[in-house]
Image (cartoon, rainbow, N blue to C red):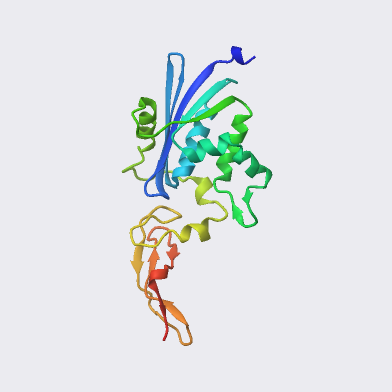
Length: 224
């Protein structure tokens, strides 16, 4: 039966700058003499999400069962799929151990569903090593640079663990807000210390767009 299926070759790549930050994905699909390029971008995401997203979007464009060889320079993606790690995560309820939740569950779910539809092989290719299709995917994935008013990566911005986990990554003025990607600014509180307080924050980081506040350890001052 597999001999009757057409063979599609796919190259994918993803990026975010900074990470997390604005990001994008790129994919090249090839079958015989036909070639198709795909790309997309988001205002706030991660490198790993864009690597998975590139594979998902590329596979979702296929309209019939086929054999697929998918090349990616992301070991995160290729290793997790080839060694069965993602399937084990799903069986365990998307948890690693008792406390750790697997990241990017929404995209892994979509990718596993697509794997059931196609005869799919993942192959790792070294990035920036002269492969023209890999280089093209890299170009496509970086088109977000300098762009404004990018759409939201809903799976990232609305993830359940977003607030606590993401806020720890905003530590300096100018970094992108974890909710809307606007650069945060430093603010001085009107009142730094209340009576009986053990510590206070000399300053905090503030998003001028959505109003999110970030308290950082470097600004923490203990009352003597």
